[in-house]
Length: 618
Image 1: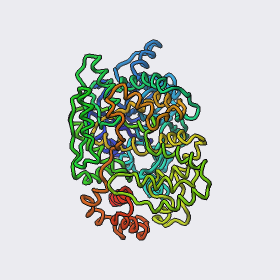
Image 2: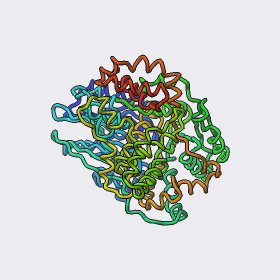
Image 3: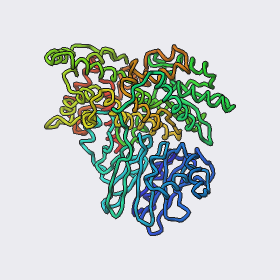
Image 4: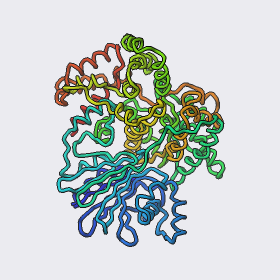
């Protein structure tokens, strides 16, 4: 795992500055390459995981000297790909996956992307054609941002903060991106909060030549043409892919551990990892769980049960009480506002885990791939209710829903009931956006003092998919938005801020494609995570499989009443909000409802606090 950056018509100070801001991603080495004619410069900071020798150093130049690559990520099937290339006469100077990728690109160009199994973002310079190509992996595990330059050139980097070290980039605010941040608590690709910086979306490529840029999409998830089969048949179809996904992610020349929350996703991965290591005569894996003083958020008991059952070497890592103090470091790592406070937990979990291993497996993606969110059940129910209840009845229910109270303790049953009823009169896209967006269109209009209601990024995405089945549409929307923009964004930014590589077996693209290829009736036959729970029953105690879902979230409501109270009062003021171009009356209304306990606006308040911190630091 690494950090990469580069630019056309480079200067040494710019390359050094970008590399310096990526040093945390690659503490084991760094390299730079500049085209002899000065057309392009590439930099790379290295976290050595596969082939620890200098043979894996980057940027890597092809033997013929025509091609140069800067690569961030892992190609998990590189041993098989290398064998294929050797049968074609290729010889290799290293044991790295980078060299395998470079040789594939030399032979097949971007047609080779379909053969790659892994997480990656890379830049390829063709000295003969004078063209620069950027590529991002299918699901967006690894980040890549870029900027068009005033002279027609291009600059890119793994992180916004690194790209901001390049001169001549328009860093003024993008007000549309700000509106989308308030909606999602992250800025969806391709936007960033800076006018001049864009995110390359997952599954996309970008080509630059002679000042011209073209982009294209090379992968996207496909739902809606699924096979209907029994639960046992579905398990038989999925199990080999899941087993292989874990096995591939254990290949490393450093020690690999595993995050273990006690939930189904990480427990299944840990079980398969433990079995594979046992079959190979290796010691049990090391597992890591974050613990909390607040019982409602703590899963140490469940994680202990799993660790004992599987015989892992288990460590409990207590969450610090002052995690919010790391807000400035979090903002720097993202390079723009990011409103999900779980990022702070991931940073702390990664920091403490890094003291023991260099690589950790995690269960991210299980909810999106296997249908684990409660809102998926709500979407199916809502569609049924819409077909059964007359429109006037649904309209009355939506108006009465505002009377339902909610708790600030972290329990969401009442809030979910209110949100379900309040969205009954809406269309499918509007309903889903109503559930997953935080500041709704009316709130954003008031906050940003807009003349008209702003667009809904989630409703637009959902509606553009053209899917009739609500489960297909909800899962596809999340795979294209919530997963890369939220979960994968904080997973990469926070783990790489402490040089820990995190690998995600549940996002193996062949596994994702196979599960998506099952009908929604099969995927949701017994409700949330039907197939993964069936797999889990073959590996884990029933008490773990059937217990209620508990997300990995901080006690934000409690933090606002205690640790963060003075910080909110100090930073979210009329003066600070007006400097952000926000209406103080609208902001103060949110703060008042939170203080009075009338509504749970904890995440909204945190998002405003993050925004203010970012604005003050730029």
